[in-house]
Each structure stands twice: as C-alpha cells, then as structure tokens.
Amino acid sequence: MTDYFEVHDRDGAARIGELRLTESVTTPGLAEGAEQRSAEQSSGNRRETAVVADAGSLWFKEHEMPEGDESQLTVLPHRAFPRGTDDEVMDSFAVDYPDVDFPSAAVIAPETAEDFGTDAYVLSGAQGVVGHGAGFKEAIIETRGSIPSDSALFLSGVATPKNVATLVYAGVDLVDADRAVVKGTQGKYLTTENEYHLDELDELPCSCSACQRRMNEFTREHCVDHNVNALRAELAVVRQRIRAGRLRDYIEGQARHDQWLTAAFREFDQQWSYVEERTPVLRNTELAAATEDSLRRVEIQRFANRVTTRYQGRFDNPLVLLPCSAKKPYSESQSHGQYHDAIQFRAHKVSMTSPIGVVPQELELTYPAQHYDSVVTGRWSEDEKEFVSEVLRRYLEQNEYPRIIAHVPEEGYRDVCERVEDALDMEFEYTVEGHPTSTESLANLASTLSGELKYGKRERQHNTVRGIADYQFGEGAGDELFSSINIESRYPKLRVHDDDGEQLAAMVPQYGTLSFTLAGARQWVESDVPERRIEIDAFAPHGSVLAPGIVDADDDIRVGDEVIIEGPKAFAIGRAEMSGAEMVESTRGVSADVRHVEEK
Image 1: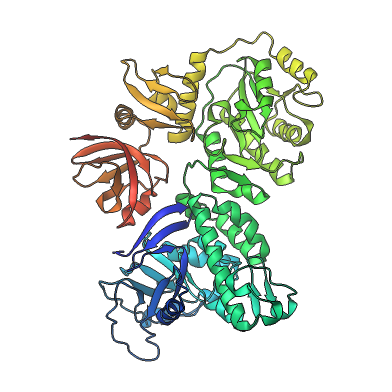
Image 2 (image 1 turned 135 degrees about the vertical axis):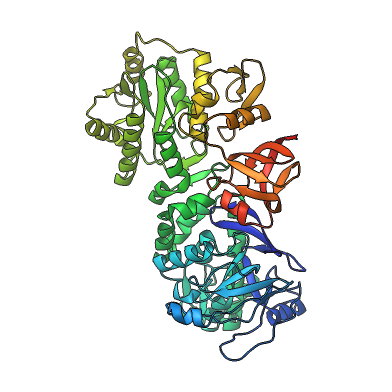
C-alpha cells in the first residue's frame, strides 16, 4: 500500500504528485542524499527536494533493515541489475522487500517490477536505456504497467536540463542531480538545449546565482552549481506545464534538441493504450498544434476516431465542406459568419482542418475542436493531406448526404477533396472562385443551395444534443438517450428536458459536452448505451470520491468522463478524475468529483 505518495494532477503519463515526508515534496522533482541536504541547509540554500537515504546494496554485504523516518525516502536494501541481465539471474537474486511503516522505495528492473508495497520504485539500469528511444519506451511502459499507479517512479543518474521534460512526459516522478553534477565536474555546462565545455563559452547564457560572475572567474565548482540550478529550473517549468495541461506542446519543441528525445516521444505516440488511458478526454486549455507530430497526439486521434465511428449525421440537407478559421469556435469567426449568411440553414456544415480532420457543426465546441491553435502558412504538408483526407473519407462512409458541396480554397483543401472523390468514386460540387469569402464565391455557394429546404431551430438544437451524445457516449447514444426531448435556453447553454419537464442534462460550453442530472443518469442506466460506472463502499459521497472508497471501476473510464457512481447507500453522477484502472489500484487521491447524489 502506498502511504506517503499521492497524485494530484495529470497530463498524460506526467503527474503532479506529493511525496508526504515531514516536509512535503512536490513531484516531478529532485531527490538527493541526506548529506547533500544537510550541506544546503547549513549554507542557507534550502531546496524543495526529496531527501533520500540509501540503505545499501546487498551485492557486497548484508545490511540491517533501516529504522527509517518520515523526514526522508528510504531506499530499502537491494540488488540492482544492469540492463540485459538474464531473467534466471534476476530471479535467483531477487530481494524480498518487507512491509515498513516509513516512506520507502524498492529498487527494481522492468522485468522484476511488481507491487512491493513501497511508495516509490527506483529503476535499475536506467543509464542503459536513457539515450535510446525504443529501449527507454519499453522500459518505462513495462515498469509502469507493473507498479501501482499511485507510486513514484525514480530514475537515478540520468537527468539533465535537456532531457528531464521527456523523462517526466514518459511517466517519471523523481530524478536526482548526479549526472548534472558529474558533467559540471568535467567542465561541461548544461542548458535545456545543449551541453558546452567551458572552453567553448564566450559568455554565460544564464542568470542563476552561480553564473553571477565574470567568465574568467567561473570555475568547475560553479559549473556544478549552475547545472543543478538549471535542472531544478527546468523541473519547475515542467510542473507548470503539467498543471496547465500543456506539457505535450512543450515537448514537441524541447525534444528537437536531441535525436533520441525526438525518437522517444514518437515511440510513445505509437503506444496508444499507454498514452490514451492517461490522457484526459477534455480540458479547458489551448492545444498548440505547431508540428506534424501534433497529428499523432492522442487528443487529435481520439477526436478523429470518434467523429468517424460514433457520430451520426441527422440532417437530410446537403453537406457543405468549409475551411476552418483561426478564431474558435468557428461560428464566431467573420468568415464563417459570411458562410452562414450564404447557406441560411439549408445545408449541414462540416469544417475541414489540419490537424483535427473534420468537425461537424454540432461538435465545434467539443474538445479539442474549439481549443486547438495551429500554424497557418497556407500550405499543407503531405502528412496533413493524407490525414485529413483519410478522416474525411471515413466520415463520408459513415454518413450519407444527397449532395456534397466543397466551398474550400485551392491550396490543400481542394487536393484533399479530390483524393476522397477518387477513393469513394463520387463527385463534389465546387463553389470557390479565388477566395472562399469573395463576393463571387459566396454568391456561388448561395445559388448552389437555391431550392433546398431550411431546417428549423428545434431540429438544429435536437441534433446538436444528439450529436454530442454520440461523440461522448458511443454510437447511437444520441437517439437512445434523447429520443423524445425538449430543449430550453439558448446555444451554447442548452438544457435537455424529458416530455414531463424534468431536466436530464445540460450542455457545458467550455468543453462542448453534456453533463447529466440524476434523472439523466438513471435514464442512462436504463438504456442500452454502455455505462462508465464506479462502484463504491457503503457511504454517500459529497463533493468527491476518494480512491480508498472505490470497490471497482470500468476499465474504459478516462479523466474527464461522465461517470455513474453507485454503492449500497448512494447513487450519484459526476466526472472522473482518474482513469478506471487507476481508481482501482490507488489508495490515495480524488477519483471522481460528484455533481449530484441521492442517498438510498
């Protein structure tokens, strides 16, 4: 059982945690020996780092079990194995870690990792995998899959200011400054983008306390201090990025400074189950799509998958494909206002965009459709064309329209449309002459829709609610949950009521999703739509459900999901703060926020 570590926030595999020592330490963070900490405190330079006491290696001699205390993380007596050690050797020399009542860590290899009841796990052989994209990915995923979700993963002797963001992105919680110190004693000056020998520097590109001196006065001792300061500063940046839900944006740029870092995060992009399980389904923060690697982000792939497998178009009108706009949501942009004036509810609008793919008008608020920002150059790369054309093709195979009108510019968009025409053996009608908002183009769009019937406000609102339900809960959910409803209020704050006037759900504008009332939750339970359910002990939750109260949870629950919470004494509806697997494994932390509860 993890007693001294708790996860408070998540951004994919990266977490903000708390190591509950006498002085709590925020992770991801630094760990250092007790002697180092004592020296820092005596010099008045107190650092927010975890004090680690190593009880010793059993390779050389037997060690007594340490007494331990709550002021430090004690690494229990251990045997570390270098990378590539034979499984039989590791089995023969495996250590039986005892249960202790103080903050503790076990030393493990990926092949020997399991739940030893400690608060942290030190990965042996880390120096053998850091620097190799595929090997690093395999070691982290294998280890993380074997140790408890609410335990800290500690990599020693590998962290630098340049690589620590990628280490944390992969799922590492604690690092030490050993490598930064060694580099400093060698006269190697570390930054977040490179490593320089002191002889190569004409000036010091840093303003930390160690660098507040002339270049000719800067010694290797100062270099050590600078390297540790730079590592600590980079960890602070990473923590802030996690809190903002924007570590991936940072990683896409930071990893470019070293080929193995680029390889590592691309390797993780290919590990869908590991990354997707840990990535929230919604958040109210910008998603910066600045590189072609953004196409492989979980949020973007998940949106494209749901739009092409869950969402069902319900309008009988023609389809009009439109270019995206810089302003989000699209409907609030000047260009889409002009398109709307030409279309006048006579067609179903779907926006084409890189890197999202296609966005039906009902989902323009749904994360990440209204949250992304991309680099606009007017030119599409081959990867972008391939991705968007594939999404559009799958969308049109899922949804039938009497006509398809492409009101899109030549560059990028037209090529995508023509690829889909060829793939599906169909013809689009093109209406743009020059620019999509030119007078001639808008007139062409309006005249092309001449004679088409308009859909009404009621149909638009009902289809919006049902389309969001499809996306959020699964294929067919919109019709199953909301076959007969009444809508109150105005878009984007729609409230859904049944025929008797009882409210079932409300649209949440900042996420573009639906939140249920208790009545809506019960209708969800009674329907054939797959539930996301949390089973709790015999108590009535108010405010939140903590991990110790969880009996079971569905594996497909993700952070941000709408969840049903039920136990012997209560029925509730809320939002998940952990994945389903993490809820079951964890012994600390908030599993779900409760919106409404009814005591039994």
